[in-house]
Amino acid sequence: IYKGSENYILSTDTRSQLKFLEKLDQLEKQRKDLEEREMLLKAAKSRSNKEDPEQLRLKQKAKELQQLELAQIQYRDANLTALAAIGPRKKRPLESGNESFKDNPSTSGTSSLTATKPFRPRITRICLRDLIFCMEQEREMKYSRALYLALLK
Picture 1 (cartoon, rainbow, N blue to C red):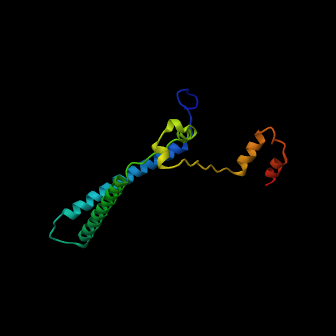
Picture 2 (cartoon, one colour):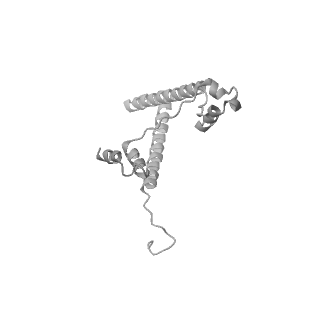
Picture 3 (cartoon, rainbow, N blue to C red):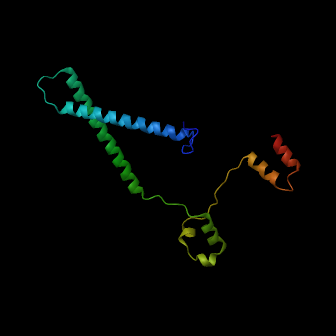
């Protein structure tokens, strides 16, 4: 039915389908957890004269659940407080800006960027495959012995 119609496009986007199914599972789990929590809290609040073992077990589980939630809230608050004490994250200054200060010191004057910490170039790691690719692109190195030795490694 769908193959002949121009209005429908057949796609196999597995990643988005899996994300959708995971989200559905997560929502279902949250709903079940919420229902169980409400049942436990209702059981813990009930004041029946007959204390059966099942009722005691539910009350104990409700207390543990409340303590766990309290611990999570305290942990989250402690993390937020620590992050607030550290301060906002600072972005690194652009490398091109620092190079212009280094090249022309008369325009920089007493800049706070150069005064606080000296410019340190970023280290880029390359592998042998990158070197071979660059050697193949250069006209002088294309037929060199060094390239053939690198290809043998």
